[in-house]
Image 1 (cartoon, rainbow, N blue to C red):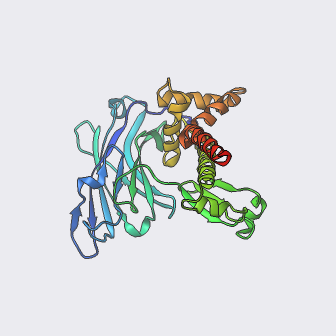
Image 2 (cartoon, helix red, strand yellow):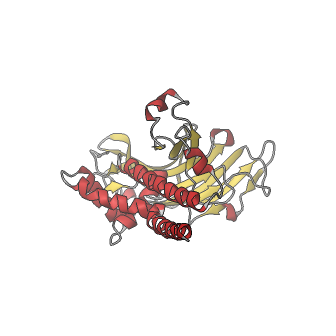
Image 3 (cartoon, rainbow, N blue to C red):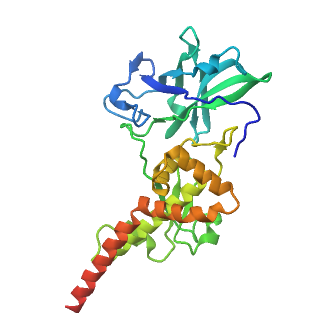
Length: 332
């Protein structure tokens, strides 16, 4: 949780990636086709593709717009700057560029962010912050845009959805840190750049069941139900991780986090609070999480949303029908 001891900027800080360019070793810059840049998904896909070169450098052209009060000379902020920060957790890379004013009032700004292919491993997040001098203290972040873009160097198609990272590993025979979990069928790790599910291959028969293709009717039924249960636990774990360290504005309003944490919250909140907008739903969650008695009331909502995301009700209904058919077949 983060509370700011100074006045923060309210209002919309709009920005977007206008275009992108790639550069191969010893070659000129080439424009990236629009099909690789999605303003809806907010993803720039720079993964391997036969239509473009094996690039070593990329350049993103950015634009941003500030609310009028941000540049009001009589306001509480001086020397207002807009910066874009590209973060790659896998390589611990952070690249920053400052926007330059292109309008007379300083509200409209542009920037070009250069990055190197060797600095990126998978998917990097791109966020925009407004920095100013407040009460004589320079470099204070007075606003962070709700909009976040992603730069994906693995996928060639711009898609926000990413598959979960599932690893098959023996808990008893593997790394020592997993030994104490040897009786657990799986574990969910939310500490990395994307959530990881570790399936315990030392759990008798689990690896063969999950990794099997086809099998008998009973095996398929059990496998589908098991996977649904696993997914439900994953959604629950990543939700708790996402709300565990929310940043909070000066007035107490929680802010959607960046990366997969923000994606998880935007996916689950409509199921938890279908009558509320996502921003208001996040406020409800934050109030319950920090309140004296609200956390218990929140748990059924989390369980319901996680089960829906994982398809547990549908899978369970199908399982019951399949078991009835199998039982009738045995009786016959």
